[in-house]
Length: 112
Image (cartoon, rainbow, N blue to C red):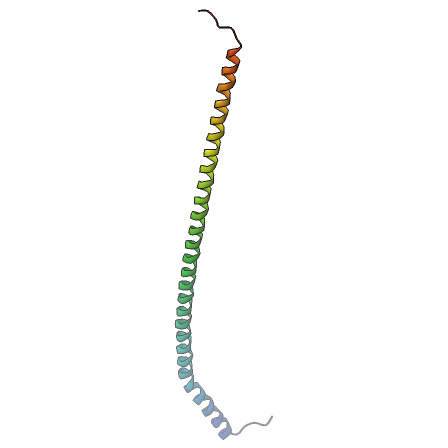
């Protein structure tokens, strides 16, 4: 490589200095882009959070409705089962009374 002339070296340094003078403007442009990106991302995250919150509330309300429906069905089944048990117990009691009455008819009465 041949040594450069003084004129070439000065021209090269001037070009480099010009690029360095433009550097603060370029950095400021990048800084502005970063700030804009942060704002856009913040807005996007906020919108996403709002959408998720609304969706979660909807799911919660839907589940509450289903739970209430199941609870009401179970309550009716339990009430029907209770009534069936009472009816069966009443029938057994009446049979027991009849059996006891029938058993008592065949025995001689005791004197007191």
